Image (tube, helix red, strand yellow):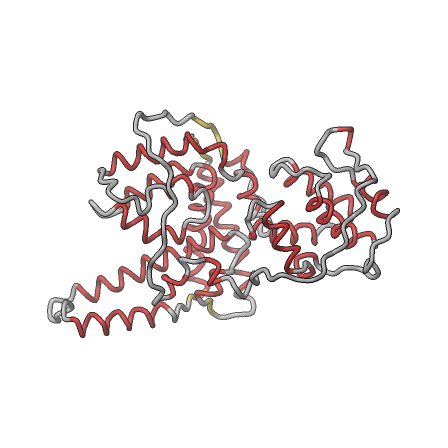
Length: 374
């Protein structure tokens, strides 16, 4: 798929988004660190595109040093010392508001393009690669790609692929056609922007065009990671290792929230299968007695047990912890159970294929009910 976009809307949206985020963060802090950037917004892709740009600037700084003709940078001692210096430098990221805002604007625009038109985005990335080093370029940058990664992952670490740029470009387009039905919903990806300011997809996309299917085909294959982690930019290759302070690792626990009794029928609005009816849900939950339901729950985003967070991420949110986090924060902002169920219906039930009668969905809805009704 290729799309014709409203570039004026995109520019204004990115500018507003960056201004809001920077205004909130720098109201209490003077500068931002690398770890701050990794956790900056609910959109992991935006955060990592900012880090990607810093990585590019870091590499440019290294090349400037090596371009000095008066010193032997091929000497092993110099090489080791320079590597150590650059790694130390990478761990001292310190960005002030005036420098961060344009980086964030660019990252927002890139993330929106990746969400809506992954073929064009990844083809543009391939075109940036040095001649003859496309595979190395993709392997080095794959840590920064968080959305629609299956479109390009099969090219990474593809031993002996050995084709020129045009073959890579055709392969990306062909692979997209083969897997596009399994990719994450564009609406769900763009929903992660909503905590800052909603993104209007209908205003952004002017017209869509089908992508011609080229004759070249390639098998999809996951890349392997075996790189050292000696700099900040190496460490972000494994997102879990840099997000431990945000999302703790799931651990087995002895107790879980009691399961709702399944004998009471869950009905749906207007009889439409798969649509939750807040009235009938309340009638169901309030007739049942649950251990530990005394007292009002606080913020859902802070109240989930580790095992619940793990289950909801896996069973309800396609393994996307950022999407669960965004959903919980959005529900926390609702004023009532009815409003919360309306939000769940509009954003998640249909998009993620939830089956309302299943245990994970019922347990999730029970928590929402406890927040507003108990």
